[in-house]
Amino acid sequence: MVFVDLSPNVHLIIAPMRDFSSRKEVETSNFGLDPQRPFLTIHAVDIFVRNQDQSLRFYVDQLGFALAFDARLQSGTRWVAVSPPDGTAVLTLIAAAPDSKEYKRIGRPTGIVFVTEDVIAKYEEWRERGVRFVFTPRLRRVKFERHLTAPRSSAGTVVADEPVWGGVFTRFMDIDGNSFALVGFDEVNQKIEAQRRLAAAKLESERRAAQELEIAKQVQARLFPQRLPHMESLEYAGACIQARQVGGDYHDFLDLGRGRFGLVIADISGKGIAAALMMANLQANLRSLCAIALDEPERLLRSVNQLFYENTNESAYATLIFAEYNDKTRRLRYANCGHLAVLLLRHDGAIERLDSTCTVVGLFKEWDCSMRECQLFSGDTLVLYTDGITESFNNAEGEFGEQRLIQALQRYRELPPQALVPSIVNEVQEFSHQEQQDDITLIVAKCKGDWHQPALDLGR
Image (cartoon, rainbow, N blue to C red):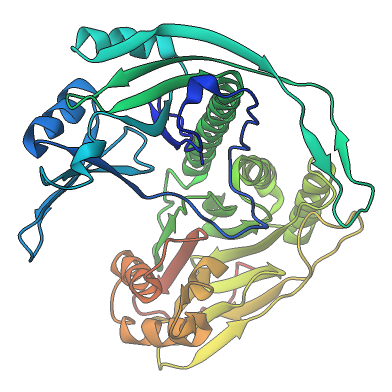
């Protein structure tokens, strides 16, 4: 059995022959686990020694092995074991009694083979540390026949092409004269090098993914509102807590002019840098066209849909809420494009849901939407959010859900938006107890002060 690791040090083989150098026909092993067979490996091998302390120093100081354990059993026997650098097996150093048959085995070949990718380098390193070698490293190549037997076949065996086995080998001894083989197989070296290449490729892929993730997070962070327009009758706050895998959540606050204020929340399909770029596309479209929002909000959203449709792949879309608030009349016009319902918590505790008014943005070329309106009063609270809140998961209780969100809003309803937003976010995170899988985005807006319906609504 062979233990292979990416460590540049040595690995342990329990050789099936007493004298490795005299082997005439060698069939190399297949390194790796076969998923079709039960896992089976060697854990420990006994090495009989005269003095455990001296042997322990040899294996640790001169060979560079690690101390696996050193303990005294209830019987009084000391149990000492060391492990090669790859940690796949241990050598148990047993102090044999002088009159035992095990004592007579001290100083003989152990039948144990250590594999390294560079026998010459290991030979020079260990020799400098005082390790005794039986002979200098030798190159040996042997041709042999590999007989293949077809399963469930009566045709007998088939002789495959004559392969060549080769490698560099030598022998060394511990302080008691127990001898071990040190070898470097061509096939082992090739497999280790292949594993190294795969590992390097994996690391590079992970590095690129991490870099893309960081870029996506930076793109998303720059899209968040940098300036908060002042409203006399409305106080508001928003937050987006990014997940490790950046989602496509986007929120914005727009100064539409003439005492009008725009609230936007969206959830872009997909994750990572692709979602972040689509988010940037959506924000650019909204901000460049928001001048027409006052008089023709439906036209604004049709233009946004067209640009999003034309500049993204065919499966890309976004759920979106665009709401326009009139600071003078406290009237809200909104379009809910396939997004979660807006929650309107009235000052008396009643809950209203502002449901979808049209389908998602960017998926269809021919697209239209309708706007709806509602009147806000002092103490009313408007809540826009993404599914990162309601779909936060707890193994015992399932999803956080809309009902828990409503209950949390009612508990914290007296708080200003700047305090209410983090309170809700904290409650969601404490509920989940798991790594955040999706962005958590929340906007809370609350009407403030006394207000009376004007005789003439100049905002219409």
